[in-house]
Image (cartoon, rainbow, N blue to C red):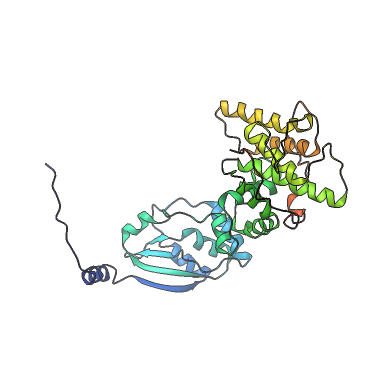
Length: 330
């Protein structure tokens, strides 16, 4: 038989009194922790604390040495037995750099507090950039980092993932955010970030080439038309009207259709098209498409055929957003 507990109704004053008694010994303050003091605090680390992650310490060291490490809400915490329950990576970074750093220090926390340390949602790059004053969605942040990526064994979201990369990602986003805003208005929420990144590279490089007169293409589309045409094909396998004008898939568009077919084969094999190899293949297809190359086979790129994305000028001055443009992107 279920035991039904009695519900106790407490007044706000009674709740406040209970919490005051429960946490009366907790001490909170700001300390400028020297390497020597950090060594003392590490001597109080609890036996079963999480395994130290070297990459975390190296990242903290970089932030401290570059003077980007500042006081934050993440505290150095001790329980009622004066055992360190939170902050080992930061203290180790202080010791390794030999630099004094500011921290909030909390003492006399209930021992069970260590069970809930770090379970909150961590702040990702898009959150940090937005908090800094540049509003960016998580998807747009991924798109920009894919476009910035070098061709190697990692993706752009892995190559540019640390707080020290926030500024260059934010500044690159500012240079091209009108194009991304335009794509978002075309209801492309389900279009893979990797494809939008490739379309952005097409758009930005075509604008650069038009301004410098450096490349002749095998089609007459504008940069915006070509980028959207690419997205339409790789997202659905079909062309869609652009600015009210019907578009067909021509031999000069074949690279995008080959890419679409390749991703369909990948889906059948239960492989999501989001790896470094997938990006290298997508980049090659996108470059063929930008040029209008009539091809029947695409090989994975070993070197990026596009110009370095971060070196291209802003496209925002060129972008003219049309409210009437329609697309079948899904």
